[in-house]
Image (cartoon, rainbow, N blue to C red):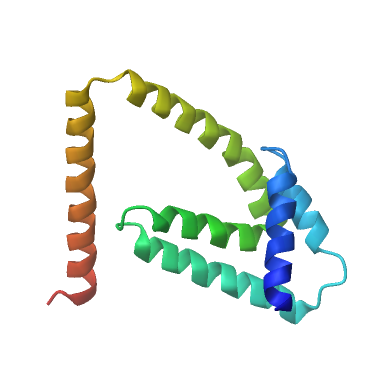
Length: 136
């Protein structure tokens, strides 16, 4: 249960930070008094979670969130990763807000075309991944 309490505490810490400054703060909070074994374990867990997220990317939804969770693990142990995420987060928020505005302004036909193209890309990526892993 202590592990889940630590995860909840870490999530609250990340959530309470302002975009563009939360991950470095998270990194600095995690550096006090942690054993090297625990630091290595966090990096390994983060990399495993990122790998799982990459495998899940062709599936709708969870892949991106899983990769984000893995990078948050790495941000707790790497100042470079933390600073990179702080740089990236405001830009992603801005791009997503612009995409949402564009989606809301687009016609139903344009939305349908976008969904169709996205579905073809996802299916193609899934088939390509399957072929790479299990093909002759």
